[in-house]
Image 1 (cartoon, each protein chain N blue to C red):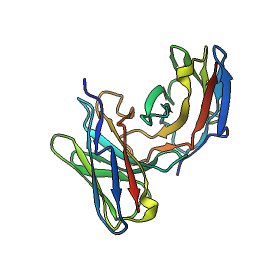
Image 2: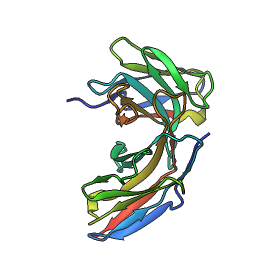
Image 3: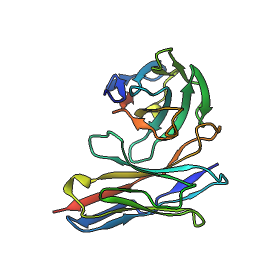
Image 4: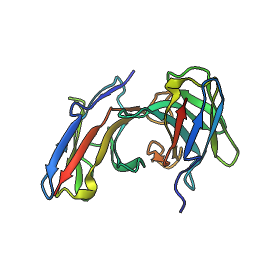
Length: 116
Length: 115
């Protein structure tokens, strides 16, 4: 069974600064997908970024980027130029290929507060 | 392009009752997954439906069952409700084909309170 660990329950950052959220996972799969989702106080879960395990290049989406270390089973999220609207709970998620019988697994989340 | 929709938004039930939650997937998606999210925790995978069949199931009792219809919409049924079933229930849809099948898009959720 897969596990996903987010070791930082809460973090804060000043507006315009950079913050990194940590995620580690454990799996015996060689092919899988990793995601970061954002859940603002409104509770709608929003996709932030996606990484395929077979790709060595780290994914980037505007101000959001990841540091994917497959051997270390680490998948951190970096938010640059933090904005007040980035305040939310962030979840790291592991998903096996949809053709496998694996189950998706989420971490328990990191609450990020961006301060003005 | 409509995203994932869920109904109802909120629901209050008493112990022992049964509840049905509904989900319509994003346009072009054929796979629906259901999650239970307790307050302050990450979503827990309940099960996934594709081609009207349950493909995968998490560690949830048989009181939790589901269905997928030919138009890809889905229902989650919970029987014999317990206080511990109080949670936010999230539906997520994805497309099996096209290489992005693993990317799930979530609905706004249904908040269930069991008294």
